[in-house]
Length: 261
Ligand SMILES: [Zn+2]
Image (cartoon, rainbow, N blue to C red; front, side):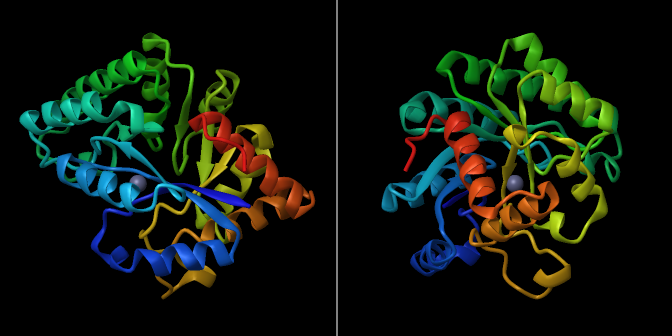
């Protein structure tokens, strides 16, 4: 039994959500952590979670790579979190910009704005005692770690984690989790990450509907793939699949304060 710890169910491709959930359950994926990125996708995430309360747990966020999100919309996200915090299992997707900086005419300004926004979001997480789902890849990871510590946030996952090994070591030592996607099946960098991190510090996710390569090439990405990711983690850890799936689910239950099945 598995949980997909990061999924964008607000996307239009998930029109047939009942079909998506059926395929997930067929693969023993019985729970989905659904993240939002701006006021509109947050509202959609709450709506789908409202219709499928047993299988979908909502999070609200402000995606750091969505450069079009205005200050007024950030305020709107803060209101949404204030209004719905008792229904949420985390704040996410939040974090620091990284990929968008490459094409930005003024990356320094974007980074300053991103830092301020993340700090505001972490303030909300502290206020409502919510864990945080972070987008902070590569060079952004070490700074996000610093901001988490400064705010005294105790529960966080670095989603689709990629960072230098030394930064990963600090993240794990601080008690935070890192998550891996279907890339772990075919990408050496992700496989090394799994080998180097204790099972207790790992989550699996699909970041659906993000497309993957290798055996997933051409397949629509859906939450059922979290089970395939867990299977690969078991291979890399050289442990029985059932044991690894149980541990990964327990990790998710602990981080998001979910009831054990
Ligand atoms: Zn995402």
